Length: 230
Image 1 (cartoon, rainbow, N blue to C red):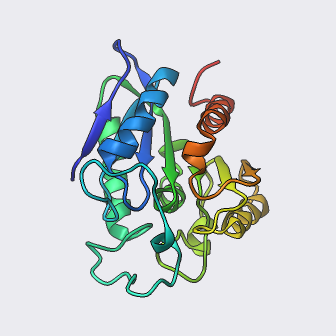
Image 2: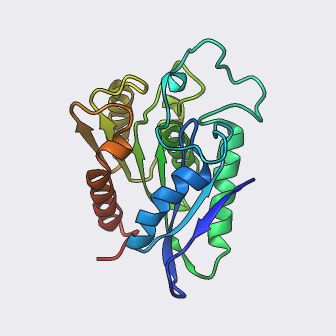
Image 3: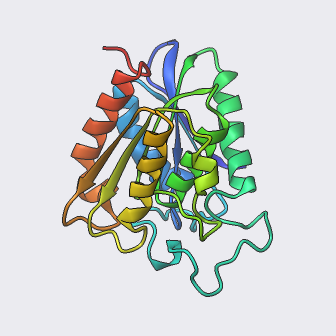
């Protein structure tokens, strides 16, 4: 597994966050750019390459039409290559949590996760499995669907108990806003703390087009739920 690990100056212990890229992104490009902002908040940051990673240096505009469910030629196939919330990608994400918990600079009681697009699907599915390790999570351009193995499934989301901040562009034509509406409905039904913020007029690239707002909302969410200290 290939990825990055970045920490603030000092000994800590610090909170830590797992950053999950979308299709075409990489740990270095997408994870590195996000880590620079999360480190300013005081996070140790880890990001792996997932099966849906692009070539080295990729990761600007992520997603695109191939992120949508049901696209021709986009099937789970070989599990080692299956994108999104596949068992292989969840294995990589869980291993990152193991690595964070092994570091003396990390406060293991304050682990968080953030993902965009296909990385958002990974984050939702991971939070469903790792409620004992994750304290809070956030996603951009993600949701759930009963129709595609790329997405986190509705069944997985019913197991989610981690407080989740959902951010979505109102004009997202790749991952439809309806997918995060369904996710919120499932969380509300199960009494899981959550917020959903819809950015009208913004498409799939919300994480870049409204970066300042996205970081501010995530920072407030992680502070509210005890990952970051006041």
